Length: 256
Image 1: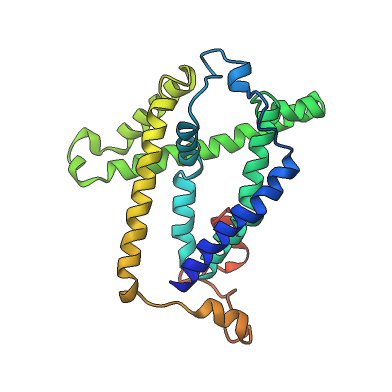
Image 2 (image 1 turned 90 degrees about the horizontal axis):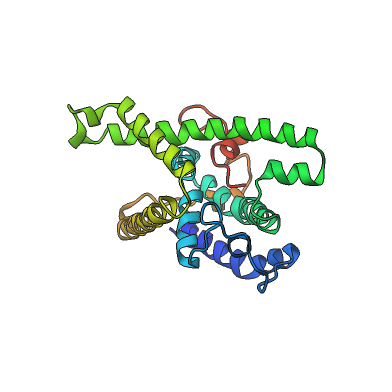
């Protein structure tokens, strides 16, 4: 539990101390007119409140990937928590922030379009192929994972709603409509509600863990790793499934 609070402190300090430094490097101008106002078209460029935008982006970031990743990474023990924290502060958060700033300064363009603008049409084509492949793999995960979760709910058992195929088609239909319709028809209405639900769920889980903390096994191995001989506490040993920490932990939990 001590490690948990230390990790929270590192995240907070990273936000308060390192965050302003990163913002300065990005050259943020608080008075600049953003693309949602300057290019407003009622379809892709639609002004929304900061709170709604936060909930939408929170849901986008905290999707099934960052949920399943730490769950699988927990098999590696306390070093997984350390990697989530340090990986976020050093790499993940900075990468996401600069990606967003870069798009913001280029009228909301995607990475292939930005690459084509600064390099050439050949490089843009390569980035389009890479992005399409990446989105295909991500799309499969974001379809099959929620479909599997929904089809396994007990109160859907024995009905058409209990079939995995049904939910795959429903999710595909939703993605299709959310992509084609103006952003304020579905995304700005549903995503904030789902983002708020995720915050409530996360808070309740955190409260439950804090209440049960005295009854949970205490983990001190991570401190032994730094204070004693590394050979006595080898954190490169495999997890219960025989998978080594290096390099699989850093692929399983992609915070960094």
